[in-house]
Image 1 (tube, rainbow, N blue to C red):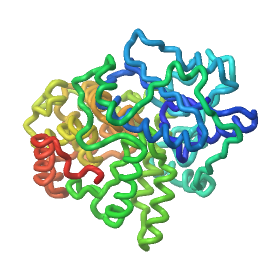
Image 2 (image 1 turned 180 degrees about the vertical axis):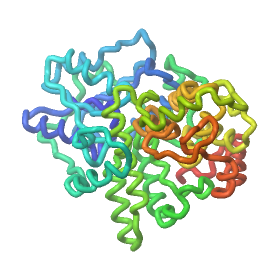
Image 3 (image 1 turned 180 degrees about the horizontal axis):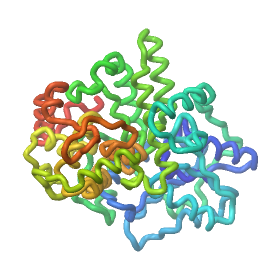
Image 4 (image 1 turned 90 degrees about the vertical axis):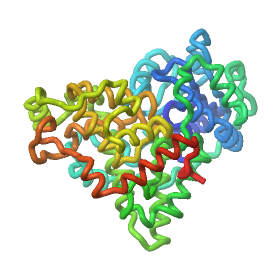
Length: 449
């Protein structure tokens, strides 16, 4: 049995292929189990909808390969919460995902102890397996040569394994399977005991087909201008694939291979994009793997800790509450627009998210308050939240993976970002108008279409 915790896909999935090879070695069929419970932290219409939108295509692709598919939707807290263990009783082995944060990091050790069959976890989130970098790296410049040395061994397509025994029925799993049809998703979401005050994203639909659509759009329309326009939010030159990477609907490996091929066809360099996709992303996984508490300020380098401590009593003005931040009620129209993008789309453009985080530090009573506000907002609204990148990017605002800059109040030697700087470097008014249009009409002009 393969248990899809974080990598909710059939294609380019090392864990699934490891399970398929094991099934062949044992002359057994393979069951793909995927659960969606009502009890995960901040469970809401947004996250439920995004995951459910991928299920119909998942079922189709698994059926084509002869792999059984049990999708269990646990609607209410009174519904069974031990389906994994019930199904594992029928299995010769269980294979799942290796992932360094959120529930998976908590579940894997405890699940292994409760099973009476072998339990394997496979890293199918990184291109270079995260466990090959055996210590926490200081910054991109220290991890980059290690990744580049290993990359030729791992930057290859994942070959699908043909199963010798197909699974024609679900057997005992049938009792727990929830069929999902696209037109029924709103009703399924409504039937769950979750937070119905966080609506689905206005900009992102979930699932493998949507991930492929965005990848093709990036390769055909955006890759040529990525290097020049990636830090201009109103230019929409980025891939917008982070929600799909987070939920495992597409892999960084297949994105990297497709990007490299397309760049060769166009006769251009894709190094800037591959640096973000592989080096920077895998630096975040390295940080999360080797940090017992990746959401803690204790992870900051010593220079950052010292300078923030030195300036801890500096006067902050203005100071906002978490509720004011959540509701985008500050004096700064650009910051408010970034927060509204989070509320409406479930994602903030990466460059403006740095500004978003820096201002939360500047306008919070303490750095700990700022950290907790940033993580809370990501946990509740971000489709790419609760991810190694989330914790790394949040802590970057406090100096992680960065260097000392000119000293100033509140920030000390931590990098500062100003509204005037954003106005010089980006088209802030165009972005604000775009978010206002999205809020007023409910229609995203820049969704994958």
